[in-house]
Each structure stands twice: as C-alpha cells, then as structure tokens.
Length: 268
Image (tube, rainbow, N blue to C red):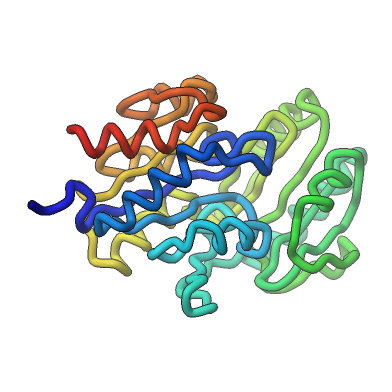
C-alpha cells in the first residue's frame, strides 16, 4: 500500500509555526517530519531568514527539497550546497531606500545579501536579531548599499512600523513590494517576490503539481504561500490574517502545529 505522503511537497514557515521562542521545536514536529519524508514526501523550510540562520534546522531535519529563504528571494539546496534560484532588488530603488532611511531615523535597517547581513543602522530590535542571525555581518553605509541584495529589513516599535508602512504605500516605486513579517518588522522585497512565488518556483523545480503541495504558516508574510498551496494550514496561535487565508487551522505552535498538519494529511 502506498504512503499518503508519496510525491507530496510540504513547506513550513519556521518562527511561530515550526519553532516557538525562536529556537524550540516540539518533539512531535520532529517525529512527524521524519515520518512524512520516510513516506516519500518532500519537506522544505520557508522563512524570512537567510539560509545560514536556518543551518542548525537544516542539519536536524535533513529536508529533501531546497528551502525558500529570505521570503522567497532565495531558493537554497542544503544537500548540494548551492543556490538554485535567486531574485535581487532593483538597484534603482536605492534612492527611495535612502529617503526612507532619513525619514525614519530611529528605525534599524538591515540588508540581506547572498553571503552576509549588512547593517546600515541599529537599535534594540536589531541587536536581538543580529544575535540570532548566523550569517556573517558587516556595517555598511546608506550611500553605498550592496548592488546584489535580496531584501531590506526595517525594525522598530510597532507604531513606527505602521507609520512606515503607510508612508511606503503612498510613495513606493512600482519595482518593490513589502509586508510586515511581525509587529516590529517591515520588509521590502523585489516586486512579485514572496513565499508564494518561492513555492511556485520550487514546485516547478521538483515537478510537483499544485494539488500535491501543502503549506503551513502563521503570519502576514505567509499568506501568499498559503494561497499558492493545494492544501494550506495555520496554527491556532497564528495571526488572524494567516488563519483566514488558510484552509484549515491546526493546534498551537508550542504543541506541534506542523505535526497536527501532517496527521491531517495522513488521514484525509
């Protein structure tokens, strides 16, 4: 009898979905992911993190499929150690980014590139973020941003981030897209690039039809991915926007939401 997981692709967000507290993975999730892959399924991570920040998880989970990193700007295959797809911000947007930098002087700015995290300005939020980011880091000047950059991450108090979002929506050029990935984070991406586009490119790479793709995520930056999957889920602890976008709502992140989703896939 064939496994219900055979030929299926399961893509999971990391923070607030697979992990809680940034580092803790419920043992149920580990067991379920191993069972899913042993049954012929392809498991992949989908995250706003750079691949280096997810390296311990990649080692632990041994995913069969390349991961979707930097919110879809980078597809990285840990098994071969190579990037299989990349999308960069248009360098023509540098002037707009410099204007944002000047307009919001308390907001931290980090720039994600292929091999390092470039820091243009810091605050308390970025100090924490840099502690948990494994990628090499260096200071950079707003007047000399890296040419090849995946995304820009802004960090500040939620009310400042909301002001930034509103200003961005009124002034942004058409070659960019953006979203909040948590209350304190605002991310600027290449136009049309998100976890949803990453999932579509990953499906094409693996030759897996939409109906055999599954995704689980907990926040606004997961919605495009949930909409692009054949079957989608959100943890009960997730943001309301993600729960409304998902087809089903499973248990709390801390109890093993990914395991709940895999059990659902097994029984349906």
